[in-house]
Image (cartoon, rainbow, N blue to C red; front, side, top):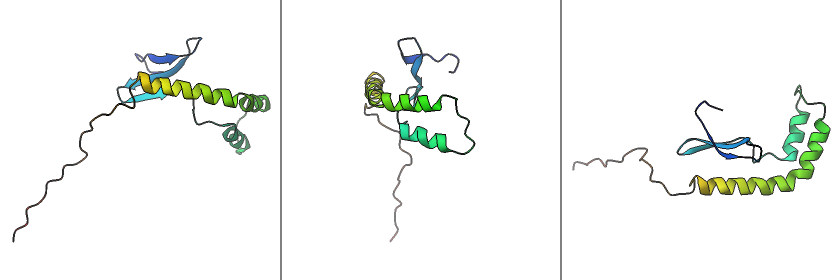
Length: 104
């Protein structure tokens, strides 16, 4: 991670789960959308280097999928609450509309 950046969430071993590099941004050290089927697609990609135990890794991903989803949901909900990500914020206007006066 970037020097000077501190995690906002860690796992039980102190491994980083999430960072907040800016008030309106956060980063995750995992892919919440990753599904076992996506892993299968990656395995089938031509010339993709694969670990020797990819079959066991895929089997474990399938076995752990439901619990992984529940954990991901809890982590994301906690981050949204802790980082106030769903708080309404006023944005600066992208452009200003100034009506032109028509002569006539």
